[in-house]
Length: 540
Image (cartoon, rainbow, N blue to C red; front, side, top):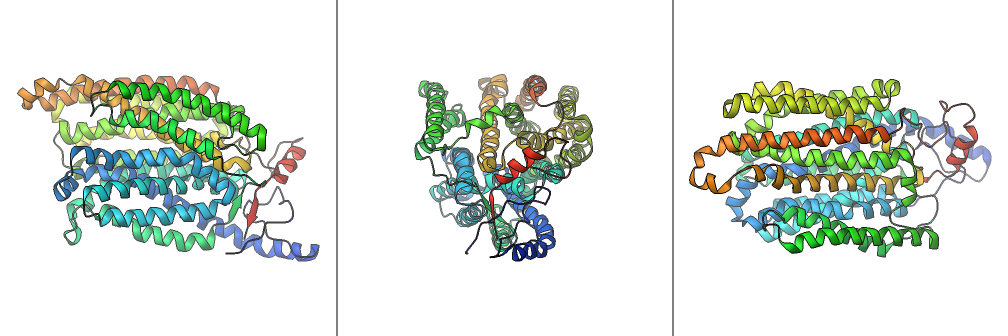
């Protein structure tokens, strides 16, 4: 599809995404701009629906497979090692490729990379659904994670360059709601699809359901998403790709496989070595920025206070998510002996609470109270976890789903007050030409935190279980899992306390995004115009 960059700087007060190509004369340009402003204004909301659907599809796919593991194991005769790769392979490929995926969007176009990633994700989902053996399923999951690494970073980038600053708060509120829904919808949807056993396919529909969604996203995305890329020519930093991928794999792989393998020495050496590789990455990226201005990781982003602080919060919050959701699943399905469907339905109040709080926080609370909203979210979520901890001990294995509703609702409200404003806070001061790189860093940081949390599960959960005793007295499994769950929740509260303190580094009030607009403060017009001149070329 041919494209043409806008030949003039866009009006700072016009909504992003409405820039049109200029003609040979100024009158042609004016006419074109006027005629396209209306349709573009409507099209950007359709584009938002498309990219949000893709983000939801990725969030669900990261968790949906856990519920179906027993069915996959029976059908394919999968070994425990293969099961580990089916679940962890996706996360490894996804985390390792996120920063590269974001930078590729800056270079070759975010729409192009989004559609490429969506196509790859759809094809990989089909291959997972028709996998004839465990090896094919593992390979397809790796491909699926790699495709997601191309698709997901473009979501926030497209939002960042498509919507003006005064609308992004509302958009990120919707994004937070999607995160909340995806967090618990995966297990519920996986339970339903597996239990229904559609056409005798057992677990396969959990992957095949992505096909119609992916095809629709491709067709509509080509029509309604506006292309954008970095305003200056960039080149892919291949050395940076090798270093960042190697460092992430060296950190995440041992965390993912460590407990199963008995925490071997080489795993500890790999994790320690990853710090050296990260150091080499920083040194090389500084050199690359001086040499040609095309580093893979834009280190200048960390000079933006809101971005640096937000990344720290994102990492720590990822640890909370990594710990809680895994131990919660183990507690309900193994400790309490609940069916996948019962466990999935129990999470619905949590999901609803997250969605409600996410929309409310960005649109009404953050503009008035700023950073205090996120800190209130951390304290609220910690309160919900403490209530849950008390209930788990008080009711033991006899706890009922309705008794879990109060702590889950409180936790969901707290999470909703964090996830949506956090994304907006991290990106608020990011120049639009670095939106792809920033988006990749945000997602990668969250994945790293999640992997760290999953690694800590072996300490805070399994470390509290005497497996030798349970092998002799399996009837004590329920009580042992309840105690381990309580221990894990205690650690989660401690991490949330750390998050509360780190949030003091965030700006007290939400910053205006780096673009001019009608609502800019007096005296900032020149800065707004200068920033608008650096706007990415928008392609029709």
